[in-house]
Amino acid sequence: MKILVLGSNGLLGSYFCKSRDNIGHEILEYNRNLYPAIDFLKPNSVIKLLEEEKPEIVINCAAITSFEYCEKSYDSALQVNAKTPSEISKYCSRIGAKFIHISTDHYYLGKERIAHTEEDKISLLNNYAITKHHGEQLILENSHSLILRTAIVGRTPQKRTFLDWLTNAIETRETVNLYEDSFTSFIHCNQLSKVIFELLTLDIHGIYNVGCADVFSKAEFCLQFAERLNHDLDHNLTKKPNLQDINKSSSCGLSSAKLINEFSVKVPTLKEVIEECALDTLGKLPIK
Image (cartoon, rainbow, N blue to C red; front, side, top):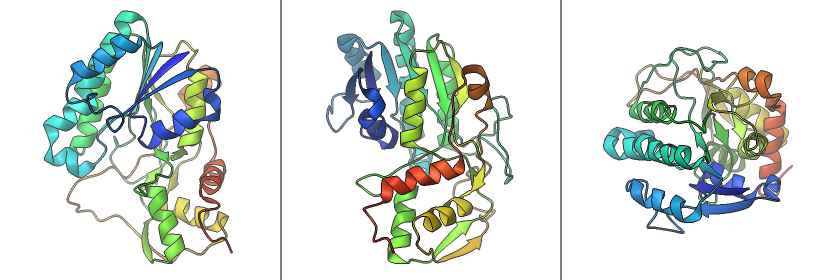
């Protein structure tokens, strides 16, 4: 299959394009570093690319994920996270190409350990959530579109991800605060890439959660990861402050039951996510 990946240099895009599961597929990598003219702020530039390449599948990993940027530059965030993905989904619908859009888990109130379903009530606490949700609603107007709500972990050369931060804290023995009341269902980018490849040939559209089979606190994740690496993590257990500059969801656990039950897709357990994160890190840390 001819698969065009938008945001191929981002966290998920980079892992997807390097995945061992891409054998037999033609992967077209597009990002602004390689092709500055392809600009999500100028949707016509993206549509022109699609018209030239004529892919069978388009996977959109591009997004503005910075909460701070979304608050300061709402119009740009709305264009990148909602309006341009909508135009892409319309184009894919017209030509019969499948469109896979990567969404978010930042949609829920409370501080509970809950595996939220696709039907659970959504609360939009910040501009990032507002723009991502608006993008979902626009994309759902078009056929051949699949929206995956998820929460990913992985490493980047720029060392800018949660897993990069955690690995650095372990290596430098920095004392860190770990939130006991911030819940998630992290899935490693390698594992999500494998799921996406499984979904390519299925007749699947609409919104689906895909994450770890378990819901856990970020504190639990950090401590189990450090233990797997046979390292200590100097830490303080704490709770998220009630007052923040930007309101963010704390109860971000996801239930992948719909995907599992309808398509028999396997998602990893917390132990398997930790193991994948460890394998991604081994060789980069002095293991005791």
